[in-house]
Length: 75
Image 1 (cartoon, rainbow, N blue to C red):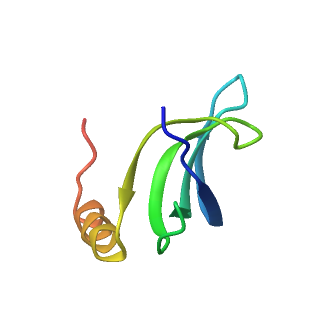
Image 2: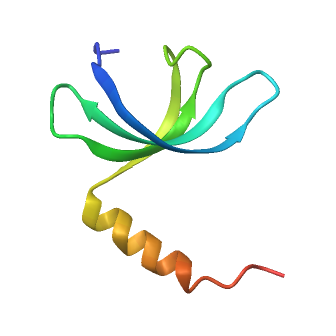
Image 3: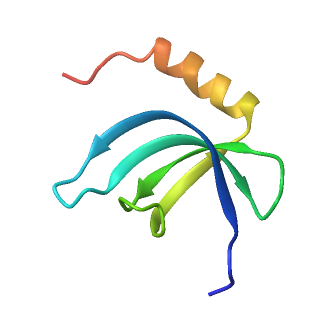
C-alpha cells in the first residue's frame, strides 16, 4: 500500500468509541499535503491506524447537514 501522509487539523466530534479504544471521529484532515477536508472514519487510540472512511468538502458536509436536519428517525 502506498504511503499516505495525513495531518489531523481539528477534531470536530467523537461519534462513538469501541471497547478496544477505536473512535469514530469527524475531523478536519489534510491528506498528502492538500487542503483539509472533513473526514469521518474510525481511528485507533494513537491515530496510527484508521478504518475506511468518508471524506467530504465543506459544501458536501453542508448538504449532508441539511439532509440530516430533515431526517426522520427510523421507528
